[in-house]
Image (cartoon, rainbow, N blue to C red; front, side, top):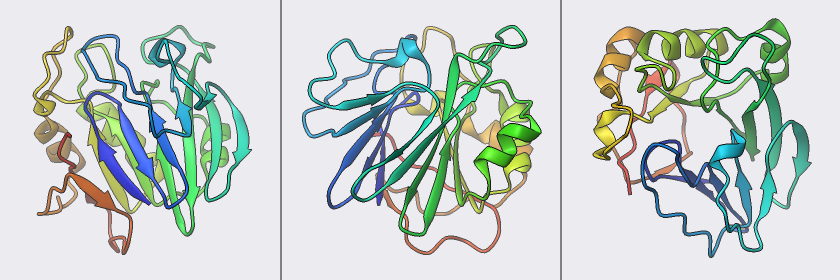
Length: 208
């Protein structure tokens, strides 16, 4: 499986048989939602679904899905800054081969025991870190990562994207300092999930 990052929460997972797009649009910056080769779209919140999804299969909520070469599980979550009891956000557990990935999206940082049990053991967590009231900040994102205990964390949705966000975002460096884990030296444009690190490591991926 190969991962590309397009800014904000926009991700693309590619396998030999499928292409999955996660949050291909944003409500606080402009993203190009090119879904021509995309088989499935995962939206962590309803507002992040493109107007035109073409022939792609759209997942927008809790549930379990099996495809030719990957599995997806949507886990209900409270949206960031939402009132207690809100379940309008969805985290996605994605599995391909031996790699298990969790995409959190904009969630409340306090994960419940039920959510942690549903997440189970994951190798990689992809988490927004930009803060400033819009999404998880460095401290909140670090707490989420510590609760899940992955081997690799990929921070997204930060000012380092080079985008003009309507809600200014913080730098990734604030998150890496807060987490205190080593940062991989290489910052690829395409990340291939091969050998994962033995200890928790931060992997930064360059925006496409």
